[in-house]
Image (tube, rainbow, N blue to C red; front, side, top):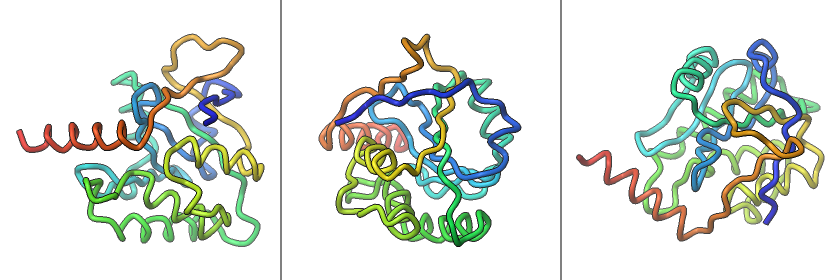
Length: 181
């Protein structure tokens, strides 16, 4: 398991308004929350449901105000499809899932379908964020990684907390129980 992310630079908000980014919110938590930002629109699946077309400006303000440790990994431009097409397609993938639940739906579910369909990363090989990051790195699909609100880094490397399927399920159970209160 590779839990290292080489942070290229502190993020400049103007830079992430164009392009495709894998977003790791609460990057210091077990597990981080995973979503995609495409041309300044953020999409993800959460325990509350589908988060679709959240303005990147609103996301960045939330990250800033709440001091959420976040990593943005810039993904290589697709050789055929436009970012708009990819964004619309990712929204449809998110819509395949009601919300994160205890039956196997996680925030990674639509993301791994997206990378399987558009970047030919075998979804069977992707069960946790580490697997996805390894596949992105192995296939040279990552261009750069930007950090926001990360604790001081040693040699510009951010370390994701190690976790396994059991830890993931525990966190989903915890988040779902908070919703019921």
